[in-house]
Length: 318
Image 1 (cartoon, rainbow, N blue to C red):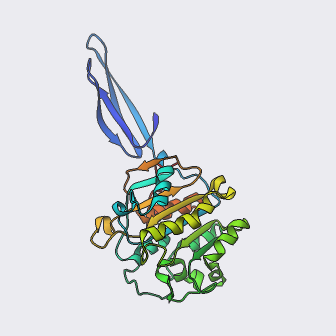
Image 2 (tube, one colour):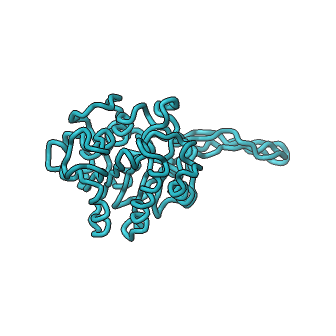
């Protein structure tokens, strides 16, 4: 029996000829027969079992995982864009998922997929508390800490719908009954707290980062969003704690409304951290449930909500 890493290519060679690809195998166990010919034309057959593992989807353990969501732009308008030089520098230096697709339109269903493994609703105006299974529930069960750092959040624990440039629909953790109906809501903090926690080595295991409507490319420009990233994310990446084992995923929630491929269209997703292969690119199709699985698996959580249970983590990056 042989153990190989997916995708594994089974090949054959015609006597006196060249090697030819016969079949590409995904993860799994396969029974097959190998036939060999000697120079005199005699043949022998051997039954073999080939086990193909999903080794490319292994996510390194991390004590600090960060998820930052940008808004409403297609992959082609972001990657290679002169309007986002900082983001593109990160895409070149770290990992880029080249075939990443949002799950739906409009925004709110994608934010829920990123945190519950389900779309739940496509009503961007929804503001009510929900009791669906979610990332916070699993983090708490696993003994992990978390915070949502939301720019323009008016005060700690705010669960209202809108306040200035802050929108609850971009801060899905504020919807969860596990949060809104308990002291966990004190982990909903203004983004001004992020730099303080970074300097004081007080960052939680999981950080959900929420730029406001002007800085996430929803109402503002891509240039404005890129400048915000450079100002606020560069200090994180240079921080000694992050450099040890940190993992940051930056992803756009959805593409333009006209792009409905895989539900929500083709978007940019970057995987950033010291254990990410430099300049790596993956052409595997992934969606928000894969990001949710990656975040939780990196933190060592063993159970997952919704579609994250069966989704593989983002692969080809580590």
